[in-house]
Image (tube, chains in turn orange, yellow):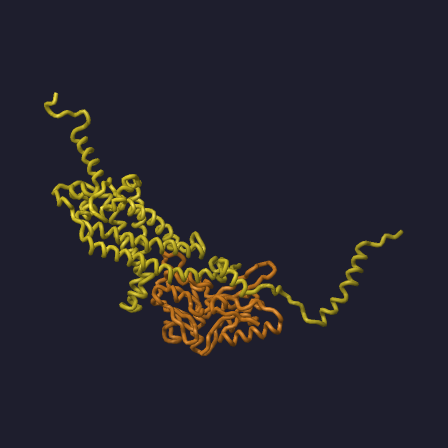
Length: 198
Length: 337
Protein backbone atom coordinates (compact mmCIF):
# COMPACT_ATOMS: atom_id res chain seq x y z
CA UNK A 1 0.00 0.00 0.00
CA UNK A 2 1.08 3.49 -0.74
CA UNK A 3 1.58 6.20 1.82
CA UNK A 4 -0.29 9.10 0.20
CA UNK A 5 1.07 12.62 0.63
CA UNK A 6 0.91 16.07 -0.92
CA UNK A 7 4.01 18.03 -1.89
CA UNK A 8 3.87 21.63 -3.10
CA UNK A 9 6.92 22.76 -5.05
CA UNK A 10 6.72 26.47 -4.23
CA UNK A 11 9.40 27.31 -6.80
CA UNK A 12 6.89 26.26 -9.44
CA UNK A 13 3.60 27.49 -7.94
CA UNK A 14 2.35 30.55 -9.83
CA UNK A 15 -0.67 31.18 -7.57
CA UNK A 16 -3.16 30.51 -10.34
CA UNK A 17 -5.60 28.94 -7.82
CA UNK A 18 -6.61 26.26 -10.30
CA UNK A 19 -6.20 23.65 -7.52
CA UNK A 20 -8.64 25.61 -5.33
CA UNK A 21 -11.16 25.90 -8.14
CA UNK A 22 -10.78 22.27 -9.23
CA UNK A 23 -11.38 21.10 -5.66
CA UNK A 24 -14.43 23.29 -5.15
CA UNK A 25 -15.93 22.16 -8.44
CA UNK A 26 -15.15 18.47 -8.15
CA UNK A 27 -16.70 18.13 -4.70
CA UNK A 28 -19.29 20.90 -4.99
CA UNK A 29 -17.86 22.43 -1.83
CA UNK A 30 -20.30 25.03 -0.43
CA UNK A 31 -19.68 28.77 -0.22
CA UNK A 32 -17.30 29.81 2.54
CA UNK A 33 -15.47 26.49 2.64
CA UNK A 34 -12.09 26.05 1.02
CA UNK A 35 -10.65 22.61 1.37
CA UNK A 36 -7.56 23.90 -0.41
CA UNK A 37 -6.18 27.42 -0.57
CA UNK A 38 -3.06 29.16 -1.84
CA UNK A 39 -1.08 31.20 0.68
CA UNK A 40 1.52 33.69 -0.55
CA UNK A 41 4.30 34.41 1.91
CA UNK A 42 6.66 37.41 1.67
CA UNK A 43 4.15 38.93 -0.73
CA UNK A 44 5.83 41.55 -2.92
CA UNK A 45 9.22 41.06 -1.25
CA UNK A 46 12.31 39.06 -2.16
CA UNK A 47 11.70 35.44 -1.35
CA UNK A 48 7.99 35.55 -2.25
CA UNK A 49 6.53 32.07 -2.49
CA UNK A 50 3.04 30.77 -3.06
CA UNK A 51 2.11 27.47 -1.46
CA UNK A 52 -1.02 25.46 -2.12
CA UNK A 53 -2.15 24.01 1.20
CA UNK A 54 -4.87 21.61 2.32
CA UNK A 55 -5.09 18.75 4.81
CA UNK A 56 -1.68 17.06 4.75
CA UNK A 57 -3.02 13.70 5.98
CA UNK A 58 -0.52 13.71 8.83
CA UNK A 59 1.21 10.77 10.40
CA UNK A 60 -0.24 10.53 13.94
CA UNK A 61 -2.82 13.16 12.98
CA UNK A 62 -3.45 15.85 15.65
CA UNK A 63 -7.12 16.23 14.62
CA UNK A 64 -7.76 12.55 15.32
CA UNK A 65 -5.88 12.76 18.61
CA UNK A 66 -8.00 15.59 20.04
CA UNK A 67 -11.41 14.71 18.58
CA UNK A 68 -13.87 14.28 21.49
CA UNK A 69 -15.99 11.81 19.51
CA UNK A 70 -13.13 9.93 17.78
CA UNK A 71 -14.72 10.58 14.39
CA UNK A 72 -11.44 10.33 12.43
CA UNK A 73 -9.99 7.23 10.83
CA UNK A 74 -7.01 6.49 8.61
CA UNK A 75 -7.31 4.46 5.41
CA UNK A 76 -4.89 1.78 4.25
CA UNK A 77 -3.29 4.47 2.05
CA UNK A 78 -2.70 6.59 5.19
CA UNK A 79 -5.37 9.10 4.15
CA UNK A 80 -6.96 10.79 7.17
CA UNK A 81 -10.77 10.84 6.83
CA UNK A 82 -13.62 11.61 9.18
CA UNK A 83 -17.22 10.59 9.77
CA UNK A 84 -19.55 13.59 9.57
CA UNK A 85 -22.32 11.61 11.26
CA UNK A 86 -20.38 11.52 14.52
CA UNK A 87 -18.74 14.97 14.21
CA UNK A 88 -20.29 17.48 16.65
CA UNK A 89 -18.63 20.61 15.22
CA UNK A 90 -16.75 21.48 18.42
CA UNK A 91 -13.81 23.04 16.56
CA UNK A 92 -11.05 21.19 18.44
CA UNK A 93 -9.52 19.75 15.25
CA UNK A 94 -9.05 23.30 13.96
CA UNK A 95 -7.14 24.28 17.12
CA UNK A 96 -4.86 21.26 16.83
CA UNK A 97 -4.36 21.23 13.06
CA UNK A 98 -1.02 22.78 12.03
CA UNK A 99 -2.38 23.57 8.56
CA UNK A 100 -5.78 25.13 9.26
CA UNK A 101 -7.42 22.36 7.23
CA UNK A 102 -10.73 21.80 9.07
CA UNK A 103 -13.53 24.06 7.84
CA UNK A 104 -17.02 24.69 9.22
CA UNK A 105 -20.07 25.53 7.12
CA UNK A 106 -21.38 28.05 9.64
CA UNK A 107 -19.20 30.75 11.15
CA UNK A 108 -20.39 31.29 14.74
CA UNK A 109 -20.90 28.64 17.35
CA UNK A 110 -24.53 29.68 17.75
CA UNK A 111 -24.92 28.61 14.16
CA UNK A 112 -23.10 25.74 15.90
CA UNK A 113 -20.52 25.57 13.13
CA UNK A 114 -22.04 22.48 11.48
CA UNK A 115 -20.17 19.32 10.59
CA UNK A 116 -16.49 19.82 9.94
CA UNK A 117 -15.38 19.62 6.32
CA UNK A 118 -11.86 19.11 5.04
CA UNK A 119 -9.83 17.71 2.17
CA UNK A 120 -10.56 14.00 1.73
CA UNK A 121 -7.64 13.44 -0.67
CA UNK A 122 -10.52 12.81 -3.09
CA UNK A 123 -11.23 9.64 -1.11
CA UNK A 124 -14.77 10.33 0.12
CA UNK A 125 -15.88 9.12 3.52
CA UNK A 126 -17.11 6.08 5.41
CA UNK A 127 -20.19 5.63 3.18
CA UNK A 128 -20.20 3.21 0.23
CA UNK A 129 -17.72 4.33 -2.47
CA UNK A 130 -19.21 6.84 -4.94
CA UNK A 131 -22.73 6.46 -3.57
CA UNK A 132 -24.94 9.59 -3.75
CA UNK A 133 -24.92 9.87 0.05
CA UNK A 134 -21.12 9.86 0.08
CA UNK A 135 -21.05 12.51 -2.64
CA UNK A 136 -23.39 14.83 -0.72
CA UNK A 137 -21.37 14.58 2.48
CA UNK A 138 -17.79 14.35 1.22
CA UNK A 139 -17.68 14.89 -2.54
CA UNK A 140 -16.43 12.51 -5.20
CA UNK A 141 -14.24 9.51 -4.50
CA UNK A 142 -11.51 9.52 -7.15
CA UNK A 143 -9.24 7.22 -5.15
CA UNK A 144 -11.88 4.46 -5.39
CA UNK A 145 -11.75 4.95 -9.18
CA UNK A 146 -7.96 4.60 -9.18
CA UNK A 147 -7.35 8.31 -9.76
CA UNK A 148 -5.26 10.79 -7.81
CA UNK A 149 -6.61 14.02 -6.23
CA UNK A 150 -7.89 16.45 -8.85
CA UNK A 151 -6.04 19.49 -7.45
CA UNK A 152 -2.66 17.91 -8.22
CA UNK A 153 -3.85 16.40 -11.49
CA UNK A 154 -5.04 19.83 -12.67
CA UNK A 155 -1.95 21.76 -11.60
CA UNK A 156 -0.74 23.69 -14.64
CA UNK A 157 2.92 23.86 -13.59
CA UNK A 158 2.90 20.49 -11.78
CA UNK A 159 3.89 22.36 -8.64
CA UNK A 160 1.40 20.37 -6.58
CA UNK A 161 2.23 16.69 -6.45
CA UNK A 162 0.03 13.98 -4.99
CA UNK A 163 0.76 10.30 -4.68
CA UNK A 164 2.92 7.92 -2.74
CA UNK A 165 5.25 9.92 -0.49
CA UNK A 166 8.44 8.27 -1.69
CA UNK A 167 7.53 8.65 -5.36
CA UNK A 168 6.66 12.35 -5.17
CA UNK A 169 9.74 13.01 -3.02
CA UNK A 170 11.87 11.36 -5.72
CA UNK A 171 10.29 13.52 -8.43
CA UNK A 172 10.92 16.62 -6.33
CA UNK A 173 14.55 15.65 -5.65
CA UNK A 174 15.21 15.17 -9.36
CA UNK A 175 13.79 18.62 -10.07
CA UNK A 176 15.90 20.26 -7.38
CA UNK A 177 19.01 18.49 -8.65
CA UNK A 178 18.33 19.61 -12.24
CA UNK A 179 17.54 23.24 -11.53
CA UNK A 180 19.90 23.65 -8.61
CA UNK A 181 17.55 24.98 -5.93
CA UNK A 182 14.35 24.28 -4.05
CA UNK A 183 12.60 25.62 -0.97
CA UNK A 184 11.82 22.11 0.25
CA UNK A 185 8.60 20.28 1.00
CA UNK A 186 6.23 22.63 2.86
CA UNK A 187 4.67 21.10 5.93
CA UNK A 188 6.49 17.79 5.72
CA UNK A 189 8.51 18.42 8.83
CA UNK A 190 5.34 19.20 10.76
CA UNK A 191 3.07 16.59 9.19
CA UNK A 192 5.36 13.59 8.70
CA UNK A 193 8.37 14.43 10.90
CA UNK A 194 10.61 14.06 7.88
CA UNK A 195 12.07 16.37 5.26
CA UNK A 196 13.01 16.00 1.62
CA UNK A 197 16.74 16.49 1.52
CA UNK A 198 18.64 16.59 -1.75
CA UNK B 1 36.75 73.77 -26.38
CA UNK B 2 34.03 71.18 -27.09
CA UNK B 3 32.77 69.71 -23.87
CA UNK B 4 32.59 65.93 -23.95
CA UNK B 5 29.05 65.05 -22.83
CA UNK B 6 29.05 63.39 -19.45
CA UNK B 7 26.30 60.94 -20.33
CA UNK B 8 28.24 59.73 -23.38
CA UNK B 9 31.21 58.83 -21.20
CA UNK B 10 28.93 56.87 -18.89
CA UNK B 11 27.38 55.01 -21.82
CA UNK B 12 30.74 54.04 -23.22
CA UNK B 13 31.87 52.83 -19.82
CA UNK B 14 28.74 50.77 -19.37
CA UNK B 15 29.03 49.16 -22.77
CA UNK B 16 32.70 48.27 -22.33
CA UNK B 17 32.14 46.77 -18.88
CA UNK B 18 28.84 45.06 -19.63
CA UNK B 19 29.72 43.42 -22.92
CA UNK B 20 31.74 40.49 -21.62
CA UNK B 21 29.27 39.16 -18.96
CA UNK B 22 26.35 39.56 -21.33
CA UNK B 23 27.94 37.17 -23.78
CA UNK B 24 28.84 34.71 -21.02
CA UNK B 25 25.26 34.65 -19.77
CA UNK B 26 23.83 33.59 -23.08
CA UNK B 27 26.22 30.68 -23.49
CA UNK B 28 26.38 29.57 -19.79
CA UNK B 29 23.84 28.25 -17.25
CA UNK B 30 20.79 30.48 -16.81
CA UNK B 31 20.82 32.36 -13.54
CA UNK B 32 18.26 31.60 -10.88
CA UNK B 33 15.14 33.66 -11.59
CA UNK B 34 14.00 33.64 -7.95
CA UNK B 35 15.89 33.96 -4.72
CA UNK B 36 16.76 30.46 -3.50
CA UNK B 37 17.33 31.59 0.08
CA UNK B 38 14.01 30.37 1.51
CA UNK B 39 13.78 26.96 3.17
CA UNK B 40 10.51 25.40 4.23
CA UNK B 41 12.24 23.08 6.65
CA UNK B 42 14.15 25.84 8.43
CA UNK B 43 11.09 28.10 8.64
CA UNK B 44 9.02 25.30 10.15
CA UNK B 45 11.75 24.40 12.63
CA UNK B 46 12.12 28.05 13.61
CA UNK B 47 8.38 28.48 14.19
CA UNK B 48 8.20 25.22 16.10
CA UNK B 49 10.98 26.36 18.43
CA UNK B 50 10.18 30.04 18.85
CA UNK B 51 6.39 29.94 18.46
CA UNK B 52 4.42 31.85 15.90
CA UNK B 53 3.14 30.81 12.50
CA UNK B 54 4.17 30.83 8.87
CA UNK B 55 1.50 33.08 7.41
CA UNK B 56 0.88 35.10 4.28
CA UNK B 57 -1.65 36.67 1.97
CA UNK B 58 -4.72 34.84 0.73
CA UNK B 59 -7.38 35.75 -1.80
CA UNK B 60 -10.37 34.23 0.04
CA UNK B 61 -12.40 36.05 2.73
CA UNK B 62 -11.62 33.66 5.62
CA UNK B 63 -8.74 35.48 7.31
CA UNK B 64 -7.84 32.39 9.40
CA UNK B 65 -6.76 30.67 6.21
CA UNK B 66 -3.80 33.04 5.87
CA UNK B 67 -2.02 30.88 8.44
CA UNK B 68 -0.03 28.35 6.44
CA UNK B 69 1.61 26.30 9.19
CA UNK B 70 1.08 26.67 12.95
CA UNK B 71 3.28 24.21 14.87
CA UNK B 72 1.60 25.49 18.10
CA UNK B 73 -1.26 23.12 17.30
CA UNK B 74 0.96 20.31 18.59
CA UNK B 75 1.38 22.09 21.94
CA UNK B 76 -2.36 22.57 22.24
CA UNK B 77 -2.85 18.89 21.44
CA UNK B 78 -0.46 17.98 24.25
CA UNK B 79 -2.33 20.28 26.60
CA UNK B 80 -5.72 18.83 25.67
CA UNK B 81 -4.73 15.17 25.64
CA UNK B 82 -2.13 15.03 28.39
CA UNK B 83 -2.09 18.06 30.71
CA UNK B 84 -5.84 18.67 30.91
CA UNK B 85 -6.61 14.97 31.23
CA UNK B 86 -4.22 14.61 34.16
CA UNK B 87 -5.12 17.88 35.90
CA UNK B 88 -8.83 17.12 35.46
CA UNK B 89 -8.55 13.47 36.44
CA UNK B 90 -6.45 14.10 39.53
CA UNK B 91 -8.42 17.11 40.79
CA UNK B 92 -11.90 15.67 40.28
CA UNK B 93 -11.14 12.09 41.39
CA UNK B 94 -8.85 13.42 44.15
CA UNK B 95 -11.60 15.60 45.58
CA UNK B 96 -14.10 12.76 45.32
CA UNK B 97 -11.63 10.58 47.23
CA UNK B 98 -11.08 13.22 49.91
CA UNK B 99 -14.84 13.63 50.37
CA UNK B 100 -15.29 9.87 50.64
CA UNK B 101 -12.47 9.52 53.18
CA UNK B 102 -13.91 12.41 55.16
CA UNK B 103 -17.34 10.79 55.23
CA UNK B 104 -15.92 7.41 56.23
CA UNK B 105 -13.76 8.85 59.03
CA UNK B 106 -15.99 11.57 60.38
CA UNK B 107 -19.46 10.67 59.17
CA UNK B 108 -22.24 13.20 58.94
CA UNK B 109 -21.63 16.28 61.08
CA UNK B 110 -24.55 16.51 63.49
CA UNK B 111 -26.03 19.55 65.17
CA UNK B 112 -24.32 19.15 68.58
CA UNK B 113 -27.23 20.59 70.53
CA UNK B 114 -29.83 18.86 68.38
CA UNK B 115 -32.55 20.67 66.49
CA UNK B 116 -34.13 23.48 68.51
CA UNK B 117 -37.36 23.50 66.56
CA UNK B 118 -36.98 27.23 65.97
CA UNK B 119 -35.69 28.50 62.66
CA UNK B 120 -33.99 31.65 61.46
CA UNK B 121 -34.16 33.02 57.91
CA UNK B 122 -30.80 32.59 56.16
CA UNK B 123 -31.37 33.04 52.42
CA UNK B 124 -34.19 34.92 50.71
CA UNK B 125 -35.89 33.92 47.48
CA UNK B 126 -33.57 35.96 45.24
CA UNK B 127 -30.49 34.44 46.85
CA UNK B 128 -31.81 30.90 46.53
CA UNK B 129 -32.96 31.47 42.94
CA UNK B 130 -29.52 32.77 41.94
CA UNK B 131 -27.83 29.87 43.73
CA UNK B 132 -29.94 27.17 42.10
CA UNK B 133 -29.78 28.79 38.69
CA UNK B 134 -25.98 28.69 38.85
CA UNK B 135 -25.94 25.26 40.51
CA UNK B 136 -28.24 23.51 38.05
CA UNK B 137 -26.59 24.99 34.98
CA UNK B 138 -23.15 24.28 36.46
CA UNK B 139 -23.94 20.57 36.86
CA UNK B 140 -24.92 20.28 33.18
CA UNK B 141 -21.99 22.44 32.10
CA UNK B 142 -19.54 20.37 34.15
CA UNK B 143 -20.81 17.00 32.92
CA UNK B 144 -21.01 18.06 29.25
CA UNK B 145 -17.58 19.68 29.57
CA UNK B 146 -15.96 16.64 31.17
CA UNK B 147 -17.56 14.57 28.42
CA UNK B 148 -15.49 16.41 25.79
CA UNK B 149 -12.25 15.35 27.48
CA UNK B 150 -13.11 11.99 29.07
CA UNK B 151 -16.26 10.83 27.25
CA UNK B 152 -14.42 9.10 24.43
CA UNK B 153 -12.66 6.87 26.94
CA UNK B 154 -15.46 6.35 29.47
CA UNK B 155 -18.80 6.71 27.69
CA UNK B 156 -18.04 5.97 24.03
CA UNK B 157 -17.13 2.29 24.60
CA UNK B 158 -20.36 1.82 26.60
CA UNK B 159 -22.93 3.40 24.28
CA UNK B 160 -21.30 3.16 20.84
CA UNK B 161 -20.30 5.93 18.41
CA UNK B 162 -23.75 6.96 17.17
CA UNK B 163 -25.38 7.39 20.57
CA UNK B 164 -22.24 9.02 21.90
CA UNK B 165 -22.25 11.54 19.03
CA UNK B 166 -25.92 12.38 19.73
CA UNK B 167 -25.29 12.77 23.45
CA UNK B 168 -22.21 14.92 22.84
CA UNK B 169 -23.97 17.09 20.27
CA UNK B 170 -26.85 17.87 22.65
CA UNK B 171 -24.29 18.28 25.39
CA UNK B 172 -22.59 20.93 23.28
CA UNK B 173 -25.87 22.80 22.69
CA UNK B 174 -26.66 22.63 26.41
CA UNK B 175 -23.14 23.78 27.25
CA UNK B 176 -23.39 26.79 24.94
CA UNK B 177 -26.85 27.95 25.95
CA UNK B 178 -26.70 27.23 29.70
CA UNK B 179 -23.70 29.55 29.84
CA UNK B 180 -26.19 32.44 29.92
CA UNK B 181 -28.12 31.53 33.11
CA UNK B 182 -24.79 30.52 34.66
CA UNK B 183 -23.21 33.89 33.94
CA UNK B 184 -26.30 35.85 34.99
CA UNK B 185 -26.50 33.89 38.26
CA UNK B 186 -22.83 34.55 38.99
CA UNK B 187 -23.42 38.28 38.53
CA UNK B 188 -26.43 38.24 40.90
CA UNK B 189 -24.52 36.21 43.49
CA UNK B 190 -21.66 38.69 43.35
CA UNK B 191 -24.00 41.62 43.94
CA UNK B 192 -26.02 40.12 46.79
CA UNK B 193 -23.22 38.36 48.67
CA UNK B 194 -20.00 40.31 48.14
CA UNK B 195 -20.53 42.51 51.23
CA UNK B 196 -20.61 39.43 53.49
CA UNK B 197 -17.63 37.79 51.80
CA UNK B 198 -14.83 40.29 52.39
CA UNK B 199 -12.07 38.28 54.12
CA UNK B 200 -11.25 39.45 57.66
CA UNK B 201 -9.47 38.40 60.87
CA UNK B 202 -12.25 36.06 61.91
CA UNK B 203 -11.52 33.93 58.84
CA UNK B 204 -7.90 33.46 59.87
CA UNK B 205 -9.04 32.27 63.29
CA UNK B 206 -11.59 30.02 61.61
CA UNK B 207 -8.98 28.41 59.36
CA UNK B 208 -6.56 28.05 62.32
CA UNK B 209 -9.26 26.15 64.17
CA UNK B 210 -9.57 23.85 61.17
CA UNK B 211 -12.99 25.28 60.38
CA UNK B 212 -14.51 22.85 62.85
CA UNK B 213 -14.06 20.15 60.23
CA UNK B 214 -10.72 18.94 61.52
CA UNK B 215 -10.80 18.48 65.29
CA UNK B 216 -13.89 19.50 67.19
CA UNK B 217 -15.59 22.67 68.34
CA UNK B 218 -17.12 25.47 66.35
CA UNK B 219 -14.94 28.51 65.67
CA UNK B 220 -17.02 31.70 65.60
CA UNK B 221 -18.11 32.89 62.16
CA UNK B 222 -20.21 35.68 60.74
CA UNK B 223 -22.77 35.16 57.96
CA UNK B 224 -20.18 33.31 55.91
CA UNK B 225 -17.24 31.44 57.42
CA UNK B 226 -13.77 31.22 55.89
CA UNK B 227 -14.60 28.12 53.87
CA UNK B 228 -17.77 29.59 52.47
CA UNK B 229 -15.95 32.78 51.52
CA UNK B 230 -13.45 30.61 49.69
CA UNK B 231 -16.27 28.90 47.79
CA UNK B 232 -17.77 32.32 47.02
CA UNK B 233 -14.54 33.67 45.54
CA UNK B 234 -13.80 30.45 43.65
CA UNK B 235 -17.29 30.69 42.14
CA UNK B 236 -17.16 34.39 41.33
CA UNK B 237 -13.56 34.62 40.07
CA UNK B 238 -13.45 31.14 38.51
CA UNK B 239 -16.94 31.62 37.08
CA UNK B 240 -15.89 34.91 35.51
CA UNK B 241 -12.79 33.28 34.03
CA UNK B 242 -14.73 30.36 32.53
CA UNK B 243 -17.49 32.67 31.28
CA UNK B 244 -15.10 35.09 29.55
CA UNK B 245 -12.92 32.33 28.07
CA UNK B 246 -16.06 30.37 27.16
CA UNK B 247 -17.54 33.24 25.19
CA UNK B 248 -14.28 33.49 23.24
CA UNK B 249 -14.80 29.83 22.32
CA UNK B 250 -18.50 30.23 21.53
CA UNK B 251 -17.80 33.12 19.15
CA UNK B 252 -14.80 31.57 17.39
CA UNK B 253 -12.35 34.05 15.85
CA UNK B 254 -14.70 36.95 16.56
CA UNK B 255 -12.16 38.78 18.68
CA UNK B 256 -9.03 36.69 18.42
CA UNK B 257 -6.95 34.41 16.21
CA UNK B 258 -5.96 30.75 16.47
CA UNK B 259 -3.44 31.42 19.27
CA UNK B 260 -6.13 33.30 21.22
CA UNK B 261 -8.60 30.44 20.71
CA UNK B 262 -6.07 27.94 22.02
CA UNK B 263 -5.32 30.14 25.04
CA UNK B 264 -9.04 30.60 25.74
CA UNK B 265 -9.50 26.84 25.69
CA UNK B 266 -6.53 26.31 28.04
CA UNK B 267 -7.89 28.82 30.58
CA UNK B 268 -11.42 27.42 30.21
CA UNK B 269 -10.31 23.81 30.64
CA UNK B 270 -8.02 24.25 33.65
CA UNK B 271 -10.30 26.61 35.60
CA UNK B 272 -13.34 24.43 34.86
CA UNK B 273 -11.89 21.17 36.16
CA UNK B 274 -10.54 22.90 39.28
CA UNK B 275 -13.95 24.50 39.90
CA UNK B 276 -15.65 21.16 39.39
CA UNK B 277 -13.39 19.62 42.02
CA UNK B 278 -14.06 22.49 44.46
CA UNK B 279 -17.81 22.19 43.91
CA UNK B 280 -17.75 18.48 44.76
CA UNK B 281 -16.60 19.48 48.24
CA UNK B 282 -19.22 22.23 48.41
CA UNK B 283 -22.04 19.91 47.33
CA UNK B 284 -21.00 17.30 49.88
CA UNK B 285 -20.85 19.62 52.88
CA UNK B 286 -24.07 21.34 51.87
CA UNK B 287 -26.07 18.13 51.65
CA UNK B 288 -24.96 14.73 52.94
CA UNK B 289 -22.00 15.99 54.94
CA UNK B 290 -23.75 18.18 57.51
CA UNK B 291 -27.09 17.95 59.26
CA UNK B 292 -29.17 21.08 58.85
CA UNK B 293 -26.99 22.68 56.18
CA UNK B 294 -29.25 21.96 53.20
CA UNK B 295 -32.16 23.93 54.73
CA UNK B 296 -30.23 27.15 54.09
CA UNK B 297 -30.63 26.71 50.33
CA UNK B 298 -33.75 24.53 50.57
CA UNK B 299 -36.42 26.38 52.50
CA UNK B 300 -34.11 29.28 53.29
CA UNK B 301 -34.77 28.86 57.03
CA UNK B 302 -32.15 27.11 59.15
CA UNK B 303 -32.45 25.65 62.62
CA UNK B 304 -31.40 28.14 65.28
CA UNK B 305 -29.03 25.66 66.95
CA UNK B 306 -27.32 24.93 63.62
CA UNK B 307 -26.94 28.66 63.03
CA UNK B 308 -25.57 29.21 66.58
CA UNK B 309 -22.97 26.47 66.09
CA UNK B 310 -21.80 27.46 62.62
CA UNK B 311 -22.48 31.18 62.37
CA UNK B 312 -22.43 32.43 65.98
CA UNK B 313 -21.49 36.03 65.14
CA UNK B 314 -24.20 36.22 62.47
CA UNK B 315 -26.87 34.91 64.89
CA UNK B 316 -25.84 37.46 67.55
CA UNK B 317 -26.07 40.23 64.99
CA UNK B 318 -29.46 39.06 63.70
CA UNK B 319 -30.76 38.71 67.27
CA UNK B 320 -29.65 42.18 68.30
CA UNK B 321 -31.12 43.78 65.18
CA UNK B 322 -34.35 41.85 65.73
CA UNK B 323 -34.35 43.10 69.31
CA UNK B 324 -33.98 46.68 68.02
CA UNK B 325 -36.99 46.18 65.74
CA UNK B 326 -39.09 44.87 68.60
CA UNK B 327 -37.77 47.38 71.12
CA UNK B 328 -36.09 50.40 69.49
CA UNK B 329 -33.37 52.36 71.34
CA UNK B 330 -34.94 54.45 74.04
CA UNK B 331 -37.89 52.14 74.47
CA UNK B 332 -38.50 51.27 78.06
CA UNK B 333 -40.14 48.28 79.54
CA UNK B 334 -43.73 48.82 80.52
CA UNK B 335 -43.99 50.24 84.02
CA UNK B 336 -40.33 51.20 84.15
CA UNK B 337 -41.08 54.89 84.69
